[in-house]
Figure 1 (cartoon, one colour):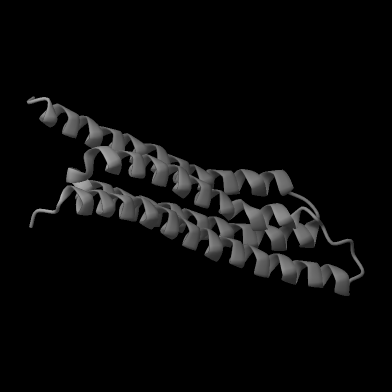
Figure 2 (tube, rainbow, N blue to C red; figure 1 turned 90 degrees about the vertical axis):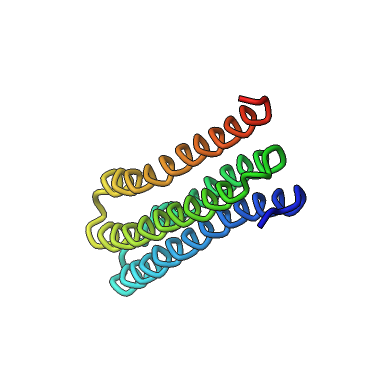
Length: 166
């Protein structure tokens, strides 16, 4: 089946939107997991008449960055779709798979942040170590974003080469 240029461009752009959507879904699940644990940790602190750490907000917000990475990749995919719509299956695939990978990173980061929130509220120690652990998980999303952008650039390069008769 051959798509018209308009349909091909639209399907490429759909890949960008899928990327943003899947990464945001993971951010929501991760932030939700971290928030539930942080709220429970605050409750424990209040019940024990201990100071409730404001630092727990950092754990809740950590998974949100993957949504920004999805937005950045969406921009790259949409730019490519406007130029090279003919290869929309590649752009759609990069958007779906890249977005899902970033979303899983956010979800797992949130689950780790939930453990960090519990540990910090119990001990009052280890914040830097917990943030380093979350940063390692964050790195997966950064790798996915960068490698996906490299793939999108390669798709555009192949189309340009074919269009030039090479």
